[in-house]
Image 1 (tube, rainbow, N blue to C red):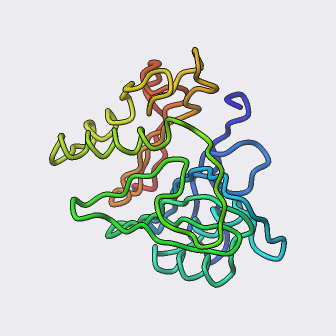
Image 2 (cartoon, helix red, strand yellow):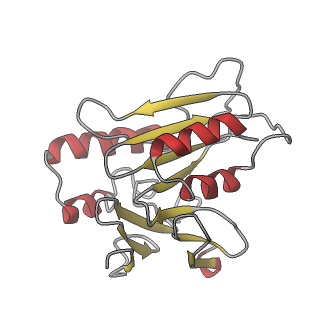
Length: 219
C-alpha cells in the first residue's frame, strides 16, 4: 500500500480547503482542513452493514469538509454510517473519538488528563453489535500510549511525535514492524497541530529516517 499513498490538496467553492494522505482513488482519509479541523482513522471489525448509510471514507471526507468538531459530529450522526470504524476528530479547541457501527454511535471524550487514545477495537459498549477479536496488540497499544502520555506530563511538539516511535511489544507495537508475528508495518505516521493548521507526515515506520513532509495552511 505504501506505493499507493498520495498527498492531496483539495479546494472547493464555499468549503474549507483540505490536505490529506490517502490511497489513490480513495475520496476521504486522514488529514486536516483550512478551518483547523483534522481527522484520523482506526479500522474496526465490528459486524454489520447498512447500504442506505454513508460509507466510511465518505464520512472521513465529510469531516474534512466541516468547520468544527460539533458540525462534523452532527452531520455524521444525522446521516448515519454504513459500517464500523473509529474517527478521531479535532479542532483548535476540542477533540472527540467517534466510534460507530451500521446502527450505533458512541463518543469517546477527552479524558481528565486532556487526551483521547484509540486503536483497532471498540472502547465503549455498542448494544446488539458483535465485534470479533482481531489484533492482540490493539489494547496493549492503547495502554502503552496512555502510560507514555501521562509519564511525559506536558508534551512538546517534538515529544508528541516521539510517542509514535515506541516499540513496546515489538514487532506488534505502536511503531509496528512486519516481522515475526507482525502481519504488517506502520504505513505512515501523521502528527497534526490544529492551532497552526499544519501537520507532519512520515511515510513508513517513524523511526525509519523519514524527516517528514509538512502539510500546512500557515500563511
